[in-house]
Amino acid sequence: MKIIEVEDYNALAKKASEMVIKRVSQSSSLTLGLATGSTPLGVYEHLREDFINNKTSYKSVKTFNLDEYVGLEKSNPNSYYYYMYKNLFDHIDIPSNQIHIPNGMAKDLEAECQRYEEQIDQVGGIDLQLLGIGVNGHIGFNEPGTSFDSITHVVKLAESTRIANSRFFHDLSEVPTHAITMGIASIMKSKEILLLAYGLKKAQILYDLMTKTIDERLPASILKRHPRVTIIADKKAMSII
Ligand code: GLP
Image (cartoon, helix red, strand yellow):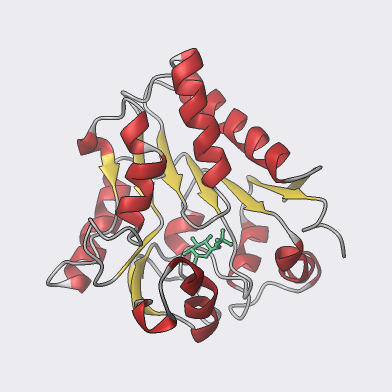
C-alpha cells in the first residue's frame, strides 16, 4: 500500500480529486467506484468545480456506489442515492443510465444484490474505487467479521456504525438497521483502490491497519493483498503511526 500524507482535509480532497480527474480525462470508458460518508464530500466538491472550470466530461464514465441503506426512499436526504445526486451527479454530465447505486427499496433484496454484482462484472469491473474507512475498520458496509470472500450482500449494521452515522439523522432510531453493500471480494476485484482518511477519529484505525495482520476482524486489512492501493491521509489521521 502506498501512503500519501497530506497537510489537512483540503489537501486530501484536492489530491484525491486530481487523481480521479486524471483517470477520467485519460480513459475513454472508465468505471468509477464511489463512496459516501463525510470523507469524499470535499472530493466531490472539487470534481464539481473542475467540471465548471475545465469541462472534464463524464459522458463515457460509469459509476458504481459501494452501498445503500435498506428501507430509505431515493428522495430521503439520508439515502446514499440522494447524497450522490446532490453532491455530484446533478452537477456533471454523466448519463443517468451509467450510474449504479444498490436499490435498498427492492422487494427482493437478495436478487438485487446478485443483479448489482453481475452489473459490475458485465462492465469488466471497477477501474478506480474510492473508499472511506469506518472507525471499526469497515469498508463499504462490510463490518468486522465479514468474509473476505463476500460479494454484494445485505448486512446488519454494527451498533457502532449506526451511532457514528446517526449524526446525519434526527435520532438513532431513524438510522436503518440494514444496508446493501458491495462485498469485500467485490471491492478487491477493482483494478485500483484509493482509500481516504482524515482527522483524529481515524488515527487509531489507520494505526491498526498498518500494524495488524490481515484478519476478517479488520475488514480493511485485506487491502494489503491488493497490488494497487493508495492511502491518502492527513496529518491528524497519521498522528500515531
Ligand atoms: C459509512 C459508509 C462507508 C464510509 C464510512 C466512513 O458508514 N458506509 O462507505 O466510508 O462509513 O464514513 P465517514 O467518511 O463519514 O467517516
